[in-house]
Amino acid sequence: GMPVVTAAGLVGRISQASGSRSTVQLLIDPDFRVGVRLADRPELGTARGRGRGEPLTADTAIDLDVEIPEGTGLVTSGVDRSAYPPGIPVGEVTGTREGSGGLALDLIIEPLADIENLSYVSVMRWQPAE
Image (cartoon, rainbow, N blue to C red; front, side):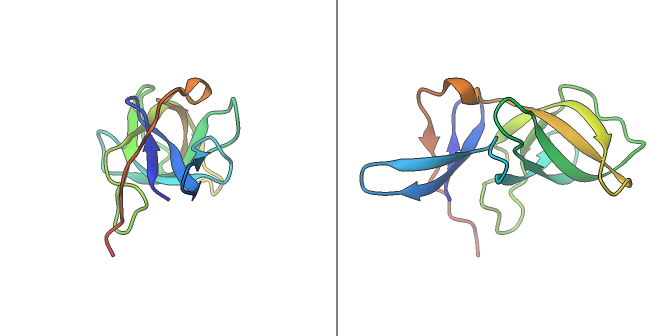
């Protein structure tokens, strides 16, 4: 479950490990979820993968009438007992849309890490506080 990063930001998390290798669940995986916050605002959301070649999406509690500029950064939220420490860069907002409940914005996010061209990654030794 430990976070996997590059210098650009979050890549995913360790999903399996053995003595000689690890498997990484990439943040573009449709089953991947991570708590995020806007880098310059306190609002929280949950980002999820949508598959290869697709942007991430994040559901939020941000009112529909709030304008979030393109290029706004998102980082891991690090809320209580989070699987990720706070402040790891995740991506940038490329657009917004009405959320499924019609009351809040969903954010469209371009990951900062180049998932298609990974050479070296780092595993963060992170244990959430209990």
